[in-house]
Image 1 (cartoon, helix red, strand yellow):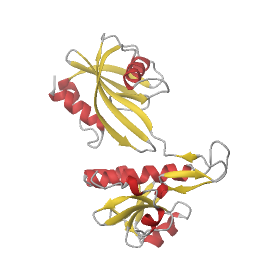
Image 2: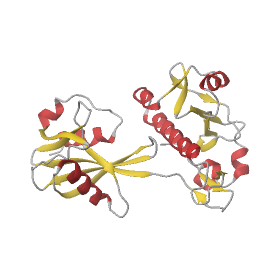
Image 3: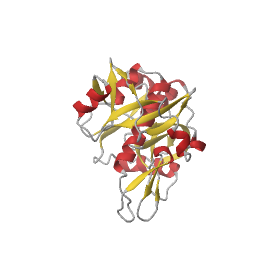
Image 4: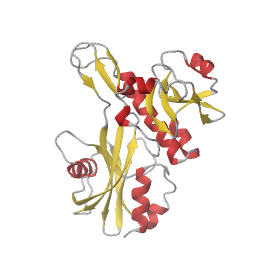
Length: 270
């Protein structure tokens, strides 16, 4: 993302406030982006809007209108609707898509971090909305990021794909990292739990912010020690080994996903 997050200036409330009158704000209503003519709407900056960064000479903010009815939010901004940003991604460039994900993620955290988990007192904004401060015990509350692994497992010239319960298509395996384990250990555990496949070598390839609401997807490529499969039948309905030709025949995947990157790289890189 080319947007300058200006992290060193977030603690300067006066500096941020001075940029509100000339800034622009991406507007959201309960995690959905307000749009006009099918495009994300930029609106005036409210006093409680979260500071996102500097775009050239203009400050960019994120405004949350969730406390009013949807019809009121649309009328106040002149928006035509409120849409899940994932619907917009295919028509946006990487920069605009990343900004929307950034705005949605931090507004979701802020709206759900109204109180301190230690003493229960109300929390207020600090650092341009990137920190919440407890009005009781003074505890500083930071946005949560939930790391998750996603992995393409290979054995010989085939890769492992699974079909989740209730789903019709096959995908790579994924799962959240647990406390006290490394990313590589998370890969081995998740693959073993879901498919029964034992994994040896694990190699990191790429990551992707996935703020729905606060995920960070870390993409890996791993080598199975054996082709033996024993599906848990809890999360997965089935798992199979696929050749490159079979994977290519499965059809398109979401072009904005790290899964597509992992699979496409495997298709062309033995």
